[in-house]
Amino acid sequence: MTRYIAALFLASLLHADVLVVATNPKFHIHHLTPALIRALYLDKRHTLHGYRVMLLNLPFNHPLRKRFEKKVLHKSTQELEHYWLIAHYRGHRPPKVVRSQKAAALYIKKITYALGYMKKSVALRYGLKIVYEWK
Amino acid sequence: MRILVFLMVVVCFAFADERYVPGQGLKLDDVPVYLGGYLSAVGEAQGKKKQIVIDELALMLYGDFMRSGFMSEFEIKDFYTKSFNEKYENEHVNTKIHIERLYYSYDIDDESEIVIGKFLTQAGFWNVLPINVLRDTTSDPNFIESIFPEMSTGLEYKHYFDTTTLYCTLQHNHGIDDQYNNFSLKHHYAVALAWNAEDSVVKASIGEFAQRNDGDSVYSTLGYMKESSLWKFMIEAGVRKTDSFHKLMYDVYMQNLWHLHVCHDLILRVERFRDRTQSRSDAVFGYTYRPVPYMAFKGELDVSDHGYGKVLCSFSIMF
Image 1: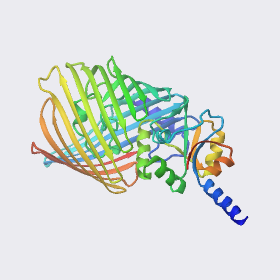
Image 2: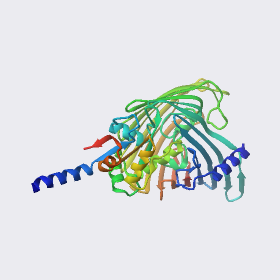
Image 3: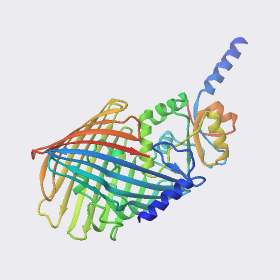
Image 4: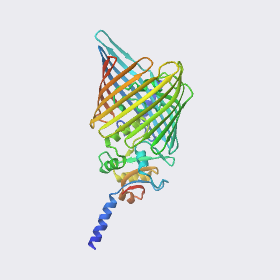
């Protein structure tokens, strides 16, 4: 019984730590590929189903941001800073920086076409639609 | 034009959102419109002649809403110049404002976009990032001066495939503020393709243009760029055949940039070209220090097989 509870607890921790990209349940997208997520965050694509997407980012030194940049975007923070400077010159905006995963979730709940990354447990807690999950 | 730009700046600051982020522009309150700009100052020493120039001073106003977007960019080129040698000193202030870019863009669908107005020609790597703070070195390679038009006025269609982007340029008219372009165009038709891998890009273009005071030209460019966390390598080649010049013009350069440290880069570029007036080989040794991403201090030594050499240093910033 103890082992069973410990296994459940460990599974929940692993589940909680899974990195996901989430959006508002009203946004009519169901699944994004890693390539498309990269294209959106690297200023190569700007719309999904004809709607201009509002991308979210966590603060500069947030560990989850570092993980997302390394695992998904394959770029260092400095490279991305330069990327978004170029985007500003081209008339495009960098992802909006929000203070925390909770702030990102609340923003996505309010803005239909917003997209952001967070831990799976946060996305589920706020009833967001998960469009990609890194296992 | 000056009054219009001045009024634009005043109105923008009056309605600005207070949350300004350096290098990302100023957002106007409650509307998706942004004000930004850039500045560059260059010091140059060639033989006994020295010069200090504020060579780039520009404002950008842009925005997007749903599928539409717009960009306007007004620049004063060589706003202030001071030249001096042992015998004389000369100062000049230029306040003529040019239209660098002015266009409307529309996302047709998730994969395609149309741009109407005046925009940068999609040819090569340097031409699409023509400002000091975004470039690797103070100077540009001659590549962007003589092979293709730097700017086009007309229509550009972009289509995004998985790893490839197609650009089609159609200009069948005179350009907006065409004196502020390397060629005064009557028409310009071009196609470009960019193949993107994770850490490399291959870009090719082909085009045809006619100048108002000169003959027709056809051109072609091919470039390759590969990047790692420690270095960035670029090589580009272009050829241009024109009615009014009996020889084929060409330009090829190769550049490597080493990231010595997060903020410090070392650059070596070699270039060989033949244009209408000369045939030459150049080498550039450069160093760039970026204390923050939107600011750059650069130093550079340019040498040529024609025996001339010059030293450049610059400061540039984007806001």
